[in-house]
Image (cartoon, rainbow, N blue to C red; front, side, top):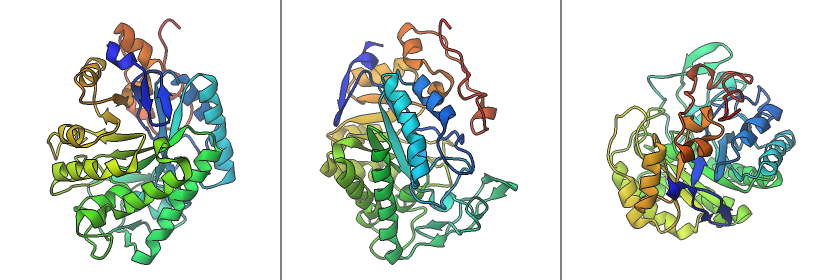
Length: 356
C-alpha cells in the first residue's frame, strides 16, 4: 500500500498522501442550501485524506437538483462553507469545492417552478427526482440560447470567487455525471447547432470557457476538472467515449490544471471501455482515478504509473478514517444507502473509527 502514502505535489498544493475523498452529494445543507456545523464535522472527520473534494455545489441560485444540496452564491453560504474549511484545516486537511450547475437534472418543484435549462430540449428518462411532493419524473428542459451562455460562465466565475472567500484550497469544475457541462460535452444530450454544438471543439466550448474564467480567479494550478465519458448516469451517452476522452486529455494539457479527475466506468454498465490508458498516454498532468477501487488496486495503479492518486467515494462515506484502515488492511464499515441523502447525523457523522 506504500504508493498510496507517498506525498504528491498537485498543482499548488502539496498532499500528504494520494488517497482522495471523492465529491459525494449528501443533502445536509437544508432548504436554504447553507452549509452548517454538521457538515463541518463530517468533512473534518475525513481530513486524513490527501485531499477532500467537497460535494456538488450550486454556483447559481435556482438550479437545485437534489433539494437540500449546498450553494456558493450567497454571503450566508460563504460563511457556512468557511466553518467547513476552518474545521478541515484545523484537522490538518486540504479541501477543494466542486463547482456545479445541474442543467436538465434540476426540477421546477425544487426551484420555485423555474424551468430547467440544457444544451438541447431532451429530458432525463428512466429515473425520478426527490421533491417536496415526492418522487417525480424529470421534465423536458428549455434549450439555452447562445446569448444566455455567457451568464452561465459568469455564474461559475462568481462561484469561484466565493469559494476563495470561503477559504478553500482550490476548486473542481464538475464536468461529469450528466450535469450541465457534461450535457454540453456528450453528443447524446447535445443536439444543438451553432458555436456550442456539433463538433468536439464546439461541444467542449462551455467547459473550456468555465475553466478559463475559474482559473482567472484561482490560478489554474488550484483548479481541477472532473469528467465521466463512460458514465450513463442521468441518461447520458456518447457515440465515442474513448475518442472524447482522448481528445479532452490532449486539449486539457493547455490549461496547466492541478489535476484531471476521471471516472473510469459506468454506474449502469451500459457503456464500457478503457478511458484511463489513452488519458494517461496523452495527458501530461496529474490524473486522479475514481470508481470502485479497492486500496490494493489503487496502490497498484499508482505504482504502475497509470494514476497519480485515487478518489474513494462510498468507502470514505462510511469510513472517516479510511487512510488508516487501508494502511493496516483493516475491515471497512459498510455504507447505509438509506441515509445517503437523508437529513441529520445518522449515516453521516456516526460511522465508527478504528480503536474508538
